[in-house]
Each structure stands twice: as structure tokens, then as C-alpha cells.
Length: 69
Image (cartoon, rainbow, N blue to C red; front, side):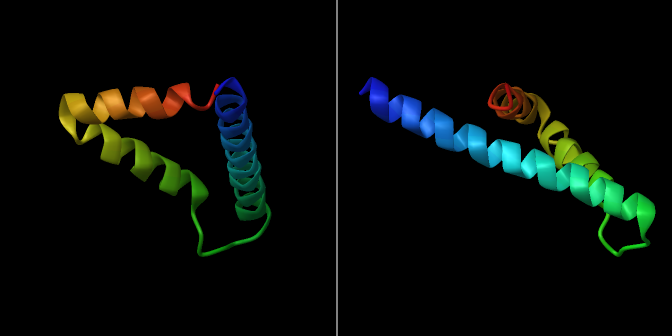
């Protein structure tokens, strides 16, 4: 059971790492070139959607942030 949990944790960590890298790449691409994609605005909208949900949204944001460790 520990191996399954470690496997899932490893895969989730890799996916989060790829997403972080893509966000950074899109931010730099948006600085260098004018694109129609706004990664910073997307992250702000995501956080606002969590915070707009009241206490449940705030708790969900805290759980989501805990996975990014």
C-alpha cells in the first residue's frame, strides 16, 4: 500500500512540476511576445473562483495549495 501511495504522490508531483514549468514558460512568452493567452490572469481567476466559494472555497484552495509542496 505504501508503494501505491508513493507512486501516486510521485506522479502527482511530476504533473504539478510540469504545470508550474508551463505557467512560467507562458509568463515569459507573454512578456516577450504579445499573445492572446494571459497566464497570470488565469491564475488570478482560479484563485478568485476558490475564494468566491466562501469557506468551502477557501478550504479547497488550502487543500489544493498543500498538494503543491
